[in-house]
Length: 263
Length: 263
Image 1 (cartoon, chains in turn brown, cyan):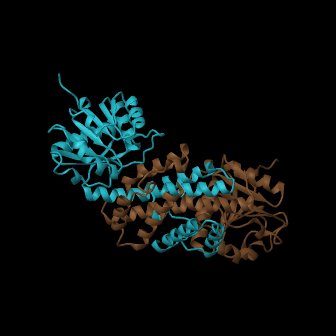
Image 2 (spheres, rainbow over the protein chains, first blue to last red; image 1 turned 90 degrees about the horizontal axis):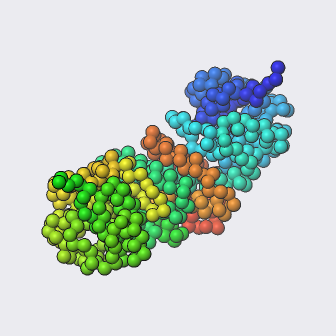
Image 3 (cartoon, one colour; image 1 turned 135 degrees about the vertical axis):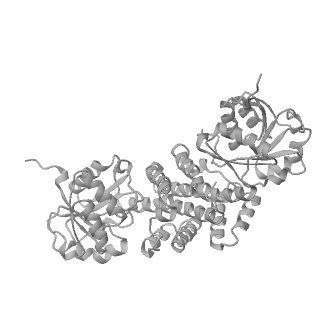
Protein backbone atom coordinates (compact mmCIF):
# COMPACT_ATOMS: atom_id res chain seq x y z
CA UNK A 1 0.00 0.00 0.00
CA UNK A 2 1.32 3.41 -0.96
CA UNK A 3 1.63 5.72 2.00
CA UNK A 4 0.61 9.34 1.62
CA UNK A 5 2.34 12.31 3.18
CA UNK A 6 -0.53 12.62 5.67
CA UNK A 7 0.57 9.35 7.27
CA UNK A 8 3.73 11.05 8.54
CA UNK A 9 3.65 10.57 12.31
CA UNK A 10 4.08 14.03 13.82
CA UNK A 11 4.96 15.06 17.37
CA UNK A 12 4.26 18.60 18.49
CA UNK A 13 6.69 19.99 21.05
CA UNK A 14 4.82 22.95 22.48
CA UNK A 15 1.13 23.74 22.85
CA UNK A 16 1.07 27.54 22.64
CA UNK A 17 -0.70 29.80 20.16
CA UNK A 18 1.28 28.76 17.09
CA UNK A 19 1.48 25.06 17.98
CA UNK A 20 -2.27 24.93 18.64
CA UNK A 21 -3.23 26.55 15.35
CA UNK A 22 -0.72 24.55 13.33
CA UNK A 23 -1.60 21.20 14.93
CA UNK A 24 -5.32 21.78 14.36
CA UNK A 25 -4.72 22.73 10.73
CA UNK A 26 -2.59 19.62 10.13
CA UNK A 27 -5.11 17.41 11.93
CA UNK A 28 -7.91 18.76 9.76
CA UNK A 29 -5.88 17.94 6.66
CA UNK A 30 -5.67 14.34 7.83
CA UNK A 31 -2.18 14.32 9.34
CA UNK A 32 -1.47 11.98 12.23
CA UNK A 33 -0.45 13.97 15.28
CA UNK A 34 0.74 11.18 17.53
CA UNK A 35 1.69 13.22 20.58
CA UNK A 36 1.77 16.68 22.09
CA UNK A 37 4.38 17.75 24.62
CA UNK A 38 4.05 20.79 26.84
CA UNK A 39 5.54 21.69 30.19
CA UNK A 40 2.04 22.75 31.23
CA UNK A 41 -0.22 19.70 31.60
CA UNK A 42 -3.39 21.64 30.90
CA UNK A 43 -2.06 23.00 27.61
CA UNK A 44 -0.74 19.60 26.56
CA UNK A 45 -4.03 17.83 27.35
CA UNK A 46 -6.19 20.51 25.77
CA UNK A 47 -4.36 20.46 22.45
CA UNK A 48 -3.95 16.67 22.46
CA UNK A 49 -7.72 16.24 22.81
CA UNK A 50 -8.37 18.55 19.89
CA UNK A 51 -6.13 16.57 17.55
CA UNK A 52 -6.75 13.05 18.96
CA UNK A 53 -3.16 12.71 20.15
CA UNK A 54 -1.45 11.46 23.28
CA UNK A 55 0.20 14.00 25.50
CA UNK A 56 3.06 14.25 27.97
CA UNK A 57 4.78 16.82 30.13
CA UNK A 58 7.97 14.77 30.32
CA UNK A 59 10.46 15.13 27.47
CA UNK A 60 11.85 11.65 28.22
CA UNK A 61 8.38 10.27 27.41
CA UNK A 62 8.22 11.83 23.96
CA UNK A 63 7.55 9.22 21.29
CA UNK A 64 10.92 8.34 19.67
CA UNK A 65 9.38 6.84 16.52
CA UNK A 66 7.84 9.89 14.89
CA UNK A 67 9.05 11.06 11.49
CA UNK A 68 8.56 14.79 12.10
CA UNK A 69 9.03 16.76 15.31
CA UNK A 70 7.63 20.28 15.16
CA UNK A 71 9.12 22.36 17.95
CA UNK A 72 7.12 25.45 18.70
CA UNK A 73 8.37 26.94 21.95
CA UNK A 74 9.33 30.36 23.21
CA UNK A 75 12.90 31.08 22.14
CA UNK A 76 14.23 30.84 25.70
CA UNK A 77 12.43 27.53 26.40
CA UNK A 78 13.76 26.11 23.14
CA UNK A 79 17.40 26.73 24.10
CA UNK A 80 16.77 25.18 27.50
CA UNK A 81 14.98 22.06 26.20
CA UNK A 82 16.98 21.42 23.01
CA UNK A 83 19.12 18.66 24.50
CA UNK A 84 16.10 16.83 25.89
CA UNK A 85 14.22 17.15 22.61
CA UNK A 86 16.88 15.54 20.43
CA UNK A 87 17.86 12.81 22.89
CA UNK A 88 16.90 9.26 21.99
CA UNK A 89 15.28 10.05 18.65
CA UNK A 90 15.91 7.97 15.54
CA UNK A 91 18.45 8.90 12.88
CA UNK A 92 15.71 9.46 10.26
CA UNK A 93 13.68 11.84 12.43
CA UNK A 94 13.31 15.34 11.01
CA UNK A 95 13.38 18.11 13.61
CA UNK A 96 12.04 21.55 12.78
CA UNK A 97 11.31 24.68 14.73
CA UNK A 98 8.73 27.32 13.80
CA UNK A 99 10.45 30.51 14.96
CA UNK A 100 11.21 33.44 12.70
CA UNK A 101 13.92 34.59 15.05
CA UNK A 102 15.95 31.38 15.54
CA UNK A 103 18.56 30.40 12.93
CA UNK A 104 18.45 26.88 11.54
CA UNK A 105 21.95 26.08 12.75
CA UNK A 106 20.82 25.69 16.37
CA UNK A 107 20.12 22.11 15.31
CA UNK A 108 23.60 21.56 13.90
CA UNK A 109 25.51 18.75 15.58
CA UNK A 110 22.39 17.58 17.45
CA UNK A 111 20.51 15.70 14.72
CA UNK A 112 21.23 14.77 11.09
CA UNK A 113 17.87 15.96 9.67
CA UNK A 114 16.63 19.37 10.65
CA UNK A 115 15.01 22.52 9.37
CA UNK A 116 12.64 25.41 9.93
CA UNK A 117 8.91 25.52 9.26
CA UNK A 118 7.88 29.17 9.78
CA UNK A 119 4.27 30.24 9.19
CA UNK A 120 4.35 34.04 9.31
CA UNK A 121 1.09 34.93 11.02
CA UNK A 122 -0.30 36.11 14.36
CA UNK A 123 -1.85 33.19 16.21
CA UNK A 124 -4.09 33.20 19.25
CA UNK A 125 -5.72 30.11 20.71
CA UNK A 126 -9.07 31.90 20.78
CA UNK A 127 -9.17 32.47 17.05
CA UNK A 128 -9.14 30.19 14.00
CA UNK A 129 -7.12 31.43 11.04
CA UNK A 130 -7.29 30.52 7.39
CA UNK A 131 -4.02 28.75 6.61
CA UNK A 132 -4.52 28.91 2.83
CA UNK A 133 -3.13 32.45 2.66
CA UNK A 134 -0.42 32.19 5.33
CA UNK A 135 3.09 32.43 3.88
CA UNK A 136 5.26 29.51 5.01
CA UNK A 137 9.04 29.96 4.93
CA UNK A 138 10.99 26.72 4.71
CA UNK A 139 14.64 25.90 5.31
CA UNK A 140 16.21 22.48 5.77
CA UNK A 141 19.52 20.68 6.15
CA UNK A 142 19.06 18.90 2.80
CA UNK A 143 17.06 19.49 -0.37
CA UNK A 144 15.12 16.27 0.33
CA UNK A 145 14.09 17.47 3.75
CA UNK A 146 13.19 20.87 2.31
CA UNK A 147 11.05 19.25 -0.37
CA UNK A 148 9.31 17.14 2.26
CA UNK A 149 8.58 20.18 4.44
CA UNK A 150 7.36 22.16 1.46
CA UNK A 151 5.03 19.32 0.52
CA UNK A 152 3.53 19.39 4.01
CA UNK A 153 3.25 23.19 4.02
CA UNK A 154 1.60 23.06 0.59
CA UNK A 155 -1.22 20.92 1.92
CA UNK A 156 -2.06 23.84 4.22
CA UNK A 157 -1.12 26.97 2.28
CA UNK A 158 -0.91 28.35 -1.24
CA UNK A 159 2.14 30.45 -0.30
CA UNK A 160 5.18 28.32 0.44
CA UNK A 161 8.64 29.83 0.02
CA UNK A 162 12.27 28.98 0.60
CA UNK A 163 13.97 31.35 3.00
CA UNK A 164 17.37 31.15 4.65
CA UNK A 165 17.92 32.12 8.27
CA UNK A 166 19.01 35.68 7.39
CA UNK A 167 15.88 36.29 5.30
CA UNK A 168 13.67 34.80 7.98
CA UNK A 169 15.24 37.05 10.62
CA UNK A 170 14.48 40.08 8.43
CA UNK A 171 10.92 38.93 7.79
CA UNK A 172 10.39 38.41 11.50
CA UNK A 173 11.62 41.91 12.34
CA UNK A 174 9.33 43.42 9.68
CA UNK A 175 6.47 41.29 11.00
CA UNK A 176 6.93 42.74 14.49
CA UNK A 177 6.27 46.20 13.04
CA UNK A 178 3.50 44.99 10.72
CA UNK A 179 1.61 43.02 13.32
CA UNK A 180 2.74 43.38 16.94
CA UNK A 181 3.29 47.14 16.87
CA UNK A 182 0.21 47.70 14.73
CA UNK A 183 -1.91 45.76 17.19
CA UNK A 184 -0.43 47.88 19.96
CA UNK A 185 -1.65 51.00 18.12
CA UNK A 186 -5.14 49.46 18.25
CA UNK A 187 -4.63 48.75 21.95
CA UNK A 188 -3.59 52.34 22.69
CA UNK A 189 -6.63 53.61 20.76
CA UNK A 190 -8.83 51.22 22.75
CA UNK A 191 -7.36 52.56 25.97
CA UNK A 192 -8.07 56.15 24.94
CA UNK A 193 -11.63 55.38 23.86
CA UNK A 194 -12.30 53.59 27.14
CA UNK A 195 -11.10 56.68 29.01
CA UNK A 196 -13.53 58.82 26.99
CA UNK A 197 -16.41 56.31 27.29
CA UNK A 198 -16.53 55.69 23.55
CA UNK A 199 -16.88 52.22 22.01
CA UNK A 200 -13.86 50.65 20.26
CA UNK A 201 -16.10 49.16 17.55
CA UNK A 202 -16.48 52.55 15.93
CA UNK A 203 -12.81 52.23 14.86
CA UNK A 204 -13.27 48.97 12.93
CA UNK A 205 -14.08 50.51 9.52
CA UNK A 206 -10.97 52.68 9.87
CA UNK A 207 -8.84 49.68 10.86
CA UNK A 208 -10.14 47.70 7.89
CA UNK A 209 -9.66 50.47 5.36
CA UNK A 210 -6.13 51.22 6.65
CA UNK A 211 -5.28 47.55 6.07
CA UNK A 212 -7.03 47.30 2.69
CA UNK A 213 -5.43 50.49 1.46
CA UNK A 214 -1.90 49.05 1.41
CA UNK A 215 -3.04 46.28 -0.92
CA UNK A 216 -3.27 49.04 -3.54
CA UNK A 217 -1.01 51.87 -2.44
CA UNK A 218 2.48 51.81 -0.98
CA UNK A 219 2.27 52.55 2.76
CA UNK A 220 4.06 55.90 2.29
CA UNK A 221 1.55 56.94 -0.38
CA UNK A 222 -1.33 55.77 1.80
CA UNK A 223 -0.22 57.90 4.76
CA UNK A 224 -2.71 60.52 5.97
CA UNK A 225 -3.12 62.60 9.12
CA UNK A 226 -1.61 65.58 10.89
CA UNK A 227 1.94 64.20 11.17
CA UNK A 228 2.79 64.30 7.45
CA UNK A 229 3.23 68.08 7.48
CA UNK A 230 3.79 68.06 11.25
CA UNK A 231 0.69 70.20 11.87
CA UNK A 232 1.81 71.92 15.09
CA UNK A 233 -1.72 72.95 16.02
CA UNK A 234 -3.36 69.50 15.90
CA UNK A 235 -0.29 67.73 17.26
CA UNK A 236 0.01 70.25 20.10
CA UNK A 237 -3.63 69.66 21.04
CA UNK A 238 -3.18 65.90 20.99
CA UNK A 239 -0.05 66.08 23.11
CA UNK A 240 -1.94 68.15 25.68
CA UNK A 241 -4.74 65.57 25.71
CA UNK A 242 -2.12 62.91 26.52
CA UNK A 243 -0.53 64.91 29.35
CA UNK A 244 -1.84 62.44 31.96
CA UNK A 245 0.04 59.59 30.26
CA UNK A 246 3.62 60.70 29.56
CA UNK A 247 4.62 57.37 28.00
CA UNK A 248 1.80 57.53 25.45
CA UNK A 249 2.53 61.21 24.89
CA UNK A 250 6.18 60.43 24.16
CA UNK A 251 5.15 57.70 21.72
CA UNK A 252 2.71 60.03 19.96
CA UNK A 253 5.45 62.61 19.52
CA UNK A 254 8.10 60.17 18.28
CA UNK A 255 5.70 58.50 15.86
CA UNK A 256 4.57 61.86 14.47
CA UNK A 257 8.18 62.95 13.99
CA UNK A 258 9.00 59.65 12.35
CA UNK A 259 6.11 60.02 9.89
CA UNK A 260 7.13 63.59 9.12
CA UNK A 261 10.82 62.86 8.68
CA UNK A 262 10.37 59.77 6.52
CA UNK A 263 7.92 61.34 4.06
CA UNK B 1 -43.10 69.73 -7.16
CA UNK B 2 -41.68 68.30 -3.97
CA UNK B 3 -37.95 68.84 -3.71
CA UNK B 4 -35.81 66.06 -2.39
CA UNK B 5 -32.77 66.41 -0.14
CA UNK B 6 -30.54 65.67 -3.15
CA UNK B 7 -31.57 68.99 -4.68
CA UNK B 8 -29.68 70.82 -1.92
CA UNK B 9 -27.15 73.00 -3.74
CA UNK B 10 -23.76 72.21 -2.21
CA UNK B 11 -20.47 74.08 -2.42
CA UNK B 12 -17.24 72.29 -1.56
CA UNK B 13 -14.57 74.49 -0.02
CA UNK B 14 -11.44 72.41 -0.44
CA UNK B 15 -10.43 69.75 -2.96
CA UNK B 16 -8.10 67.54 -0.93
CA UNK B 17 -8.35 63.85 -0.09
CA UNK B 18 -11.45 64.11 2.09
CA UNK B 19 -13.24 66.72 -0.06
CA UNK B 20 -12.61 64.67 -3.20
CA UNK B 21 -13.96 61.43 -1.77
CA UNK B 22 -16.93 63.11 -0.11
CA UNK B 23 -17.88 65.17 -3.18
CA UNK B 24 -17.71 62.12 -5.43
CA UNK B 25 -19.86 60.10 -3.03
CA UNK B 26 -22.47 62.87 -2.81
CA UNK B 27 -22.42 63.35 -6.58
CA UNK B 28 -23.01 59.66 -7.12
CA UNK B 29 -26.00 59.80 -4.77
CA UNK B 30 -27.51 62.50 -6.97
CA UNK B 31 -26.58 65.59 -4.97
CA UNK B 32 -25.98 68.82 -6.82
CA UNK B 33 -22.44 70.03 -6.22
CA UNK B 34 -22.67 73.51 -7.70
CA UNK B 35 -19.09 74.63 -7.15
CA UNK B 36 -15.68 73.61 -5.88
CA UNK B 37 -13.23 76.06 -4.37
CA UNK B 38 -9.55 75.35 -3.92
CA UNK B 39 -6.53 77.60 -3.70
CA UNK B 40 -4.86 75.29 -6.19
CA UNK B 41 -6.46 75.63 -9.62
CA UNK B 42 -5.52 72.14 -10.70
CA UNK B 43 -7.18 70.55 -7.66
CA UNK B 44 -10.27 72.72 -8.04
CA UNK B 45 -10.64 71.92 -11.74
CA UNK B 46 -9.93 68.22 -11.33
CA UNK B 47 -12.57 67.70 -8.66
CA UNK B 48 -15.09 70.04 -10.34
CA UNK B 49 -14.88 67.98 -13.53
CA UNK B 50 -15.52 64.77 -11.64
CA UNK B 51 -18.72 66.08 -10.06
CA UNK B 52 -19.92 68.32 -12.93
CA UNK B 53 -19.47 71.48 -10.90
CA UNK B 54 -18.03 74.93 -11.54
CA UNK B 55 -14.80 75.82 -9.84
CA UNK B 56 -12.95 78.84 -8.55
CA UNK B 57 -9.72 79.72 -6.79
CA UNK B 58 -11.12 83.03 -5.54
CA UNK B 59 -13.16 82.97 -2.34
CA UNK B 60 -14.97 86.17 -3.43
CA UNK B 61 -16.29 84.19 -6.42
CA UNK B 62 -17.83 81.44 -4.32
CA UNK B 63 -21.53 81.00 -5.12
CA UNK B 64 -23.51 82.85 -2.41
CA UNK B 65 -26.78 80.99 -3.07
CA UNK B 66 -25.90 77.48 -1.97
CA UNK B 67 -27.74 75.85 0.90
CA UNK B 68 -24.81 73.83 2.24
CA UNK B 69 -21.11 74.78 2.33
CA UNK B 70 -18.84 71.87 3.18
CA UNK B 71 -15.46 73.17 4.27
CA UNK B 72 -12.74 70.59 4.09
CA UNK B 73 -9.40 72.30 4.48
CA UNK B 74 -6.25 71.74 6.47
CA UNK B 75 -6.79 73.14 9.97
CA UNK B 76 -4.36 76.01 9.41
CA UNK B 77 -5.90 76.98 6.05
CA UNK B 78 -9.36 76.91 7.60
CA UNK B 79 -8.44 79.48 10.29
CA UNK B 80 -6.87 81.67 7.63
CA UNK B 81 -9.80 81.51 5.19
CA UNK B 82 -12.73 81.50 7.63
CA UNK B 83 -13.56 85.20 7.20
CA UNK B 84 -13.54 84.93 3.41
CA UNK B 85 -15.68 81.79 3.51
CA UNK B 86 -18.54 83.27 5.53
CA UNK B 87 -18.55 86.69 3.84
CA UNK B 88 -21.51 87.49 1.62
CA UNK B 89 -23.40 84.25 2.18
CA UNK B 90 -27.12 84.15 2.80
CA UNK B 91 -28.68 83.92 6.25
CA UNK B 92 -30.11 80.46 5.53
CA UNK B 93 -26.78 78.97 4.40
CA UNK B 94 -25.54 76.07 6.52
CA UNK B 95 -21.76 76.00 6.98
CA UNK B 96 -20.04 72.81 8.12
CA UNK B 97 -16.47 71.67 8.43
CA UNK B 98 -15.29 68.07 8.25
CA UNK B 99 -12.41 68.07 10.73
CA UNK B 100 -12.22 65.80 13.76
CA UNK B 101 -9.85 68.20 15.44
CA UNK B 102 -11.71 71.52 15.09
CA UNK B 103 -14.47 72.40 17.59
CA UNK B 104 -17.82 73.50 16.22
CA UNK B 105 -17.64 76.87 17.95
CA UNK B 106 -15.11 78.22 15.44
CA UNK B 107 -18.23 79.16 13.45
CA UNK B 108 -19.85 81.00 16.35
CA UNK B 109 -20.56 84.65 15.65
CA UNK B 110 -19.75 84.21 11.95
CA UNK B 111 -22.93 82.56 10.64
CA UNK B 112 -26.30 81.62 12.15
CA UNK B 113 -26.39 78.02 10.82
CA UNK B 114 -23.33 75.89 11.28
CA UNK B 115 -22.12 72.47 12.22
CA UNK B 116 -19.67 69.63 11.73
CA UNK B 117 -19.89 66.75 9.27
CA UNK B 118 -17.03 64.40 10.18
CA UNK B 119 -16.59 61.13 8.29
CA UNK B 120 -13.99 59.19 10.28
CA UNK B 121 -11.96 57.45 7.62
CA UNK B 122 -8.58 57.66 5.84
CA UNK B 123 -9.03 59.18 2.40
CA UNK B 124 -6.62 59.30 -0.50
CA UNK B 125 -7.47 60.67 -3.92
CA UNK B 126 -6.03 57.54 -5.53
CA UNK B 127 -8.45 55.21 -3.81
CA UNK B 128 -12.24 54.86 -3.75
CA UNK B 129 -13.75 53.96 -0.40
CA UNK B 130 -17.08 52.43 0.47
CA UNK B 131 -19.02 55.14 2.32
CA UNK B 132 -21.70 52.72 3.54
CA UNK B 133 -19.59 51.65 6.51
CA UNK B 134 -17.92 54.96 7.33
CA UNK B 135 -19.05 56.38 10.68
CA UNK B 136 -20.25 59.99 10.32
CA UNK B 137 -20.23 62.19 13.42
CA UNK B 138 -22.64 65.10 13.28
CA UNK B 139 -22.93 68.25 15.35
CA UNK B 140 -24.93 71.38 14.55
CA UNK B 141 -26.02 74.73 15.94
CA UNK B 142 -29.68 73.63 16.03
CA UNK B 143 -31.58 70.34 16.11
CA UNK B 144 -33.06 71.17 12.69
CA UNK B 145 -29.63 71.64 11.16
CA UNK B 146 -28.42 68.45 12.86
CA UNK B 147 -31.39 66.52 11.46
CA UNK B 148 -30.70 67.88 7.99
CA UNK B 149 -27.00 66.92 8.16
CA UNK B 150 -27.89 63.47 9.49
CA UNK B 151 -30.33 62.99 6.62
CA UNK B 152 -27.57 63.80 4.12
CA UNK B 153 -25.04 61.57 5.90
CA UNK B 154 -27.61 58.76 5.98
CA UNK B 155 -27.85 58.76 2.19
CA UNK B 156 -24.14 57.84 2.18
CA UNK B 157 -23.61 55.74 5.30
CA UNK B 158 -25.36 53.28 7.59
CA UNK B 159 -23.44 54.63 10.59
CA UNK B 160 -24.46 58.18 11.47
CA UNK B 161 -23.97 59.41 15.03
CA UNK B 162 -24.31 62.57 17.08
CA UNK B 163 -21.03 63.66 18.65
CA UNK B 164 -20.13 66.88 20.42
CA UNK B 165 -16.81 68.61 19.89
CA UNK B 166 -15.19 66.94 22.92
CA UNK B 167 -16.18 63.46 21.73
CA UNK B 168 -15.03 64.22 18.21
CA UNK B 169 -11.66 65.42 19.52
CA UNK B 170 -11.25 62.14 21.40
CA UNK B 171 -12.29 60.09 18.38
CA UNK B 172 -9.82 61.96 16.23
CA UNK B 173 -6.95 61.31 18.64
CA UNK B 174 -7.82 57.61 18.79
CA UNK B 175 -8.07 57.56 14.99
CA UNK B 176 -4.54 58.91 14.70
CA UNK B 177 -3.30 55.84 16.60
CA UNK B 178 -5.68 53.46 14.81
CA UNK B 179 -4.92 54.65 11.31
CA UNK B 180 -2.04 57.09 10.90
CA UNK B 181 0.37 55.39 13.30
CA UNK B 182 -0.70 51.93 12.14
CA UNK B 183 -0.02 52.87 8.55
CA UNK B 184 3.38 54.15 9.65
CA UNK B 185 4.13 50.70 11.10
CA UNK B 186 3.40 49.29 7.64
CA UNK B 187 5.68 51.96 6.15
CA UNK B 188 8.54 51.09 8.51
CA UNK B 189 8.11 47.39 7.68
CA UNK B 190 8.14 48.27 3.98
CA UNK B 191 11.37 50.21 4.48
CA UNK B 192 13.00 47.26 6.23
CA UNK B 193 11.88 44.77 3.60
CA UNK B 194 13.21 47.01 0.84
CA UNK B 195 16.57 47.12 2.60
CA UNK B 196 16.59 43.31 2.72
CA UNK B 197 15.34 42.91 -0.88
CA UNK B 198 12.14 41.21 0.21
CA UNK B 199 8.71 42.04 -1.24
CA UNK B 200 6.20 43.96 0.90
CA UNK B 201 3.32 41.86 -0.46
CA UNK B 202 4.36 38.95 1.68
CA UNK B 203 3.14 40.98 4.70
CA UNK B 204 -0.43 41.43 3.43
CA UNK B 205 -1.93 38.27 5.00
CA UNK B 206 -0.42 39.34 8.33
CA UNK B 207 -1.77 42.88 7.96
CA UNK B 208 -5.23 41.54 7.14
CA UNK B 209 -5.33 39.04 9.97
CA UNK B 210 -4.07 41.63 12.49
CA UNK B 211 -6.97 43.87 11.44
CA UNK B 212 -9.57 41.07 11.35
CA UNK B 213 -8.49 39.76 14.73
CA UNK B 214 -9.67 42.84 16.64
CA UNK B 215 -13.17 42.35 15.28
CA UNK B 216 -13.32 39.34 17.60
CA UNK B 217 -10.76 39.89 20.34
CA UNK B 218 -9.88 42.99 22.34
CA UNK B 219 -6.59 44.40 21.06
CA UNK B 220 -4.84 43.54 24.34
CA UNK B 221 -6.02 39.92 24.09
CA UNK B 222 -4.99 39.80 20.42
CA UNK B 223 -1.42 40.93 21.18
CA UNK B 224 1.34 38.49 20.21
CA UNK B 225 5.10 38.76 19.72
CA UNK B 226 8.31 39.08 21.70
CA UNK B 227 7.42 42.31 23.52
CA UNK B 228 4.65 40.87 25.73
CA UNK B 229 7.14 39.14 28.01
CA UNK B 230 9.92 41.49 26.90
CA UNK B 231 11.96 38.61 25.45
CA UNK B 232 15.45 40.10 25.89
CA UNK B 233 17.03 37.71 23.42
CA UNK B 234 14.75 38.41 20.43
CA UNK B 235 14.42 42.11 21.24
CA UNK B 236 18.20 42.46 21.65
CA UNK B 237 18.74 40.85 18.23
CA UNK B 238 16.18 43.15 16.62
CA UNK B 239 17.72 46.23 18.20
CA UNK B 240 21.11 45.21 16.83
CA UNK B 241 19.60 44.78 13.37
CA UNK B 242 18.32 48.36 13.60
CA UNK B 243 21.66 49.82 14.70
CA UNK B 244 22.06 51.65 11.37
CA UNK B 245 18.80 53.54 11.97
CA UNK B 246 18.82 54.94 15.52
CA UNK B 247 15.37 56.58 15.14
CA UNK B 248 13.73 53.31 14.16
CA UNK B 249 15.70 51.49 16.85
CA UNK B 250 14.43 53.93 19.48
CA UNK B 251 10.85 53.45 18.26
CA UNK B 252 11.22 49.66 18.38
CA UNK B 253 12.44 49.85 21.96
CA UNK B 254 9.75 52.26 23.16
CA UNK B 255 6.96 50.32 21.46
CA UNK B 256 8.20 47.05 22.94
CA UNK B 257 8.36 48.58 26.42
CA UNK B 258 4.90 50.04 25.96
CA UNK B 259 3.45 46.64 24.97
CA UNK B 260 5.18 44.98 27.92
CA UNK B 261 4.17 47.59 30.49
CA UNK B 262 0.53 47.82 29.40
CA UNK B 263 -0.15 44.07 29.38
